[in-house]
Amino acid sequence: MSRFAPVALTVTSALLVLTACGGGVQGTPGGSRVRDPYFPKAGNGGYDVTHYALDLAYDPDDRRLTGTAEITARAGKDLSAFDLDLKGMDVERVTVEGERARWSRNGQELVVRPHDELDKGETFRLTVRYAGTPQTITDADGSQEGWLPTVDGALALGEPMGSMAWFPGNHHPSDKASYDISVTVPEGLQVVSNGELADRSGDGDGGTTFHWRTAEPMASYLAALAIGDYDIRRSTVPVTGNSALPVYTAVAPSEEDSSREILSELPEIMEWAETNFGPYPFASTGAIIAREGAAGYALETQSRPVFPGAPGTGLFVHELVHQWFGNSVTPKSWRDMWLNEGFATYAEWLWEEDDGGDSAQETFDALYDHGEDDYEDLWSFPPAKPTSAAHISDDPVYQRGAMVIHKIRQTVGDDTFYDIVQGWAADHRHGNADTADFTAYVEEQAPDEDFDGIWEDWLYGDGKPAHP
Image (tube, rainbow, N blue to C red):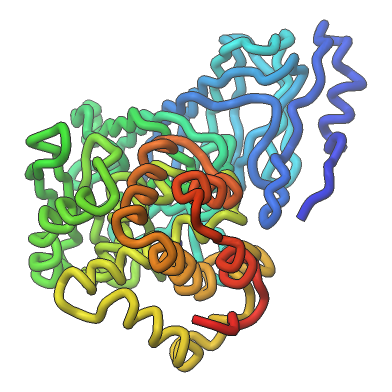
């Protein structure tokens, strides 16, 4: 786009340990968090999700969602119990490996106690049946995410914690998985999600089921649903290794005229991005252009960014370049947000430079000299150390993050810079990385250069650096 000390056990998990002998389970609970510095309740320990299969039905008239989530995961240790993140919704039934499992709710935690112990290294299948009215979640910075009802359907957006409003899961960027998302809606409505449309069929009761598949690993905050009246466009663009990459765009009828020109630029932007950042990392591309005001921001949802109204070229470039930085190379924690936003913002500078506008150096200089005129908080904290969850999407993360990238380019020169950028995207493709991984990678690729001043003053230093 766009807190913690180690905790031994939640109260619920502690009770499960005390009663574990009743079910013959000798393992320990998986843990109700992964110690993210900004979202202490995010994610869960003890297992790794490999696949989500979501079977959903939504009726916009009563705003009721019914769902079955089948989750395939691998136990990281012997487990007597484990947690999932799920905000609201009514849980009807939980099974593990086909056996009824006991479960309880503790805030956003769905605590599951399987009938039989899960052994370390075991792959298991968990099924959760649930229903209700999904919640709209207000983020720490005041933005809204989760399930956003619209006049003709809904828009589901997840950054940073909104996905737990519409499906249970391990909702932290460090646990990526593949997805199958099937959604049944009343006839005449469209459902657009990530990846590729695997199937579309009638359900026999006047509804239509759309089945979307994402084979590449995806963090749950990048999952999206757009339900409503959309005009669908299919085409292809050539990319490295694929002469006909599928393009799937969905446009709200009210945005048809205003979006035509920007969508015509997609092939050129894709070609430009591959030249700069390396091969496109996914099996399809496109965009969801919802009606203006459907959300308060654009979001880089995987393979198909979401825009509330037709975007300008700079924003379109920004969200498409996130497919490399943020979606393919995903942060290990929310502290590393600048690696997403700094690169995507710097891509806007590069596009402007290559399109005959201001050079990246001119943009950098203007920010250094007069940036506080447009961004009052530009120097309020360093990119790698946001002050709280409410500020992980603030200007220092975006603009000053881009300035860090430019300082690297200044130091190493263009040839080495693009080797670093493309190598970083290739070496961490479909994985997770943090700031320490990135700084180490830069130093390895340019061992004769001294980056200490960049890291100390621009990346981690407080206040405005003394020298541009």
